[in-house]
Each structure stands twice: as structure tokens, then as C-alpha cells.
Image 1 (cartoon, rainbow, N blue to C red):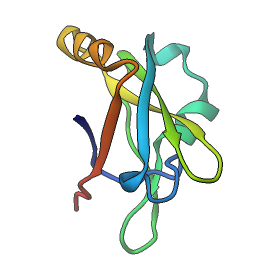
Image 2 (image 1 turned 180 degrees about the horizontal axis):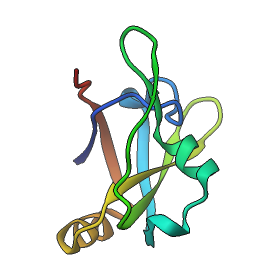
Image 3 (image 1 turned 90 degrees about the vertical axis):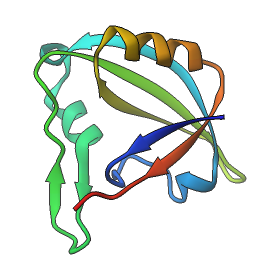
Length: 109
């Protein structure tokens, strides 16, 4: 099983995502200028260990939106994440569509 790493625990993520069964449902290439401010704010909001709120700064270039499905005992949840685009990354994530992936959060200081 492949792992998708995150440097922060984002508000968009289901609770205890690291222990849930998660599938990558799809990917979409999009340019930063085509994302709404509301989507960017929702997708990039996190807090540090002291509880201060931050927004991850996305590059204002082509991006990949990954659509992830989190299977749970209660109700499944669909959530997204935005990644920097590169041809190799697009191919890598395309090959993971439909597969179960592990979510790993490696908090950075």
C-alpha cells in the first residue's frame, strides 16, 4: 500500500485519518487561478502545536487536486488535498486512483 504524506494535520481531514481505510478516488490538474478563495482557505487551513491558525501557501501555478474517500464505521467522508504539479507526480497519483492509500502526517516545526 502506498503512503500519502502530509506535513500538517489539516482541518479538512477526517478525525483519526491515519487509522482509517482511505482510497484515492481521482485527480484533477488545475491552475491556481481557477481555484476559489473559499476552496483554498478550506483546503489549506491547519493549526500549529500551540493552536495558532495558518494557511498553507500554495504555489500560484498548475496544481493537482486529489480526491480522497475515507471509509469509516460511521459515515464515509470525501475530502480533497492540493499538491504541486509535476508530470511525474501526476502519473504517480493517476496510478493510485482506485487504490487504498495510507495517510501519514509528519508534523513539521
